[in-house]
Amino acid sequence: MYIVPLIFIMYIIPLIFILYIVPLIFILYIVPLIFILYIVPLIFILYIVPLIFILYIVPLIFILYIVPLIFILYIVPLIFIMYIVPLIFILYIVPLIFILYIVPLIFILYIVPLIFILYIVPLIFILYIVPLIFILYIVPLIFILYIVPLIFILYIVPLIFILYIVPLIFILYIVPLIFILYIVPLIFILYIVPLIFILYIVPLIFILYIVPLIFILYIVPLIFIMYIVPLIFIMYIVPLIFIMYIVPLIFILYIVPLIFIMYIVPLIFILYIVPLIFILYIVPLIFIMYIVPLIFILYIVPLIFILYIVPLIFILYIVPLIFIMYIVPLIFILYIVPLIFILYIVPLIFILYIVPLIFIMYIVPLIFILYIVPLIFILYIVPLIFILYIVPLIFILYIVPLIFILYIVPLIFIMYIVPLIFILYIVPLIFILYIVPLIFILYIVPLIFILYIVPLIFILYIVPLIFILYIVPLIFILYIVPLIFILYIVPLIFILYIVPLIFILYIVPLIFILYIVPLSPILLQK
Figure 1 (cartoon, rainbow, N blue to C red):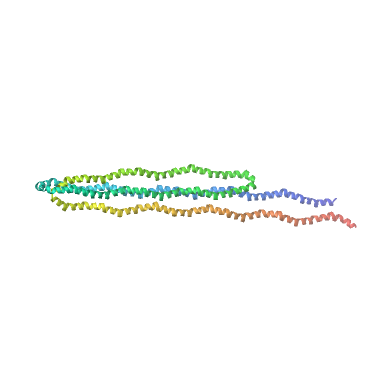
Figure 2: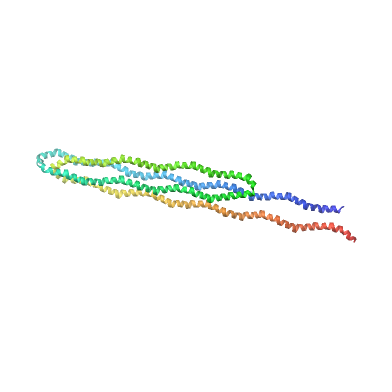
């Protein structure tokens, strides 16, 4: 009555509590609590947070920072080099070259000769030729019309026959023969041949050789550098970079996490990540890959063509064509033809018609009538003609061209042609051979290193190193060690310590109470 309930209360109830109630509490409350407080945060930290970082934060950083950085460090300088620098050259340097070199050259080659022809030549004619004509022709005419008749009447009539026939033969045959055989070829050689060379051969050489040479040495390399090289870069290098770097990067950042998500967290991926990826990544990617190139092709390319290519075609082709087809013939008709007429046809008419007429009508009678006048002419007028006319003519025909050839032409070459050659050929050559490689070495190579090599090193080396040195030990400490403790250490403690303790504290007294105590009266009676 007493011992059995006491045994039940002291041993059976605690035993039921220990063997049944405690495990039940542990399974129903402690295990879910451990799962909620430890396992769920661990899964969130180890899987969900990296997944959010890879699928959302990394693309966001790329779009907000890397893409603008690429645009600022590469696209903006490329636009500046391809469009702004040529525009500065066309709008500033070309007009400056025109003002500093072409305008002075036009002034020297066109305006100065025009001033000389329109002002200096008439001035020389008025101040020198007119007085010479007066001295050589008018004074003898006065002498002929007044003094000669008096002398003729008193002295010359007997001498006409002797002094007329022979000089007449000389004047009518010998003088024209000298003029035809010597003077006309000399005029042709000294004036007509140089004029043909200057007006026809030199422009022809310039058009046939110099202009194509400038086009081949300057314009073609410039077109190649400004258009063909960027086109090669856009059509070949950019797709190659995309295939070699962007596609693997997309595979690493997108496909691998996607495969991982398809097995580990399919429900989260289907309900949350897929819409989020589509909204935050696929839509911007579609916009960047299709809409932006479409805008560029449909709007920017035609705009570049209209703003740069069409004016360039007009400047490089239409303007020179208009100049060659209209301005050059107009200059020839309005300037060269009248100049040829004034300089050669009028003097030729004067020399071939007026001068012989004057000579025959006035000088010949004077020569044949007089004897003293030819003597005076030989002794005084001939030296005067030589001093006043022949010497200046020699100076104009030989000394002035010699000064021009030996001094002015080299000076023009040194001051204008050499700088022009330097600007049009040497400066572009220096730019192509030195400046462009320097820009590539100092700017493009570091940019490629920073944008591609450094991220590649980070992805292939630093990220695995961080994973091995930090993430793996953290997983081991936070997950594997507790798991080992729960699966191995706790059962071992239970077997080595708790089971003997239960046996000593519970089983031995129970055996004693249940068997030894009831058996003791029987043993005592015996």
